[in-house]
Image 1 (cartoon, rainbow, N blue to C red):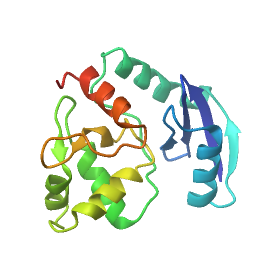
Image 2: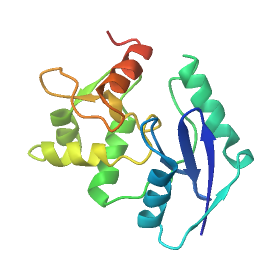
Image 3: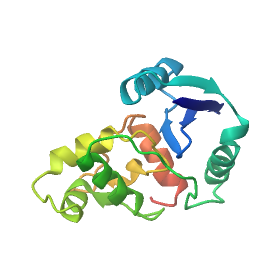
Image 4: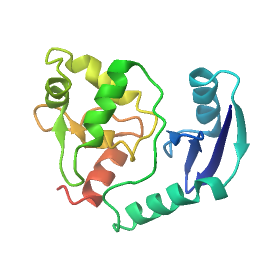
Length: 162
């Protein structure tokens, strides 16, 4: 399998023939992407191909300029069945809104699995496209984000959440 990648701002984006499979955050490195691909798709070859990822880069540029609130890029989500359920629920949170980990747990039919939802959210391989930054604590507080709480706040502010 070939996984194509490109660099956008301080992010690395990777995709298979089925869709975007991994996006790193600014506090993560090329090694983060390489290690994720090695674990999720053993034996896959990483090949740089900016042209193949031009549409995803365009969508991210539009998002960062405040011109896009919904992404159209196909995704190739690699994870457990439970993780994929959580990521699908998180992907349904509209820009400018948040949901609690408890609300996501209830939505996926596992109301007592709040911590497991947090773990799945933290393992989201395509942050921003699957907006895990929109998931907050039940008290309304910002909790855990792979990119750091400052980045989570920045993304929420950019989407119009005060």
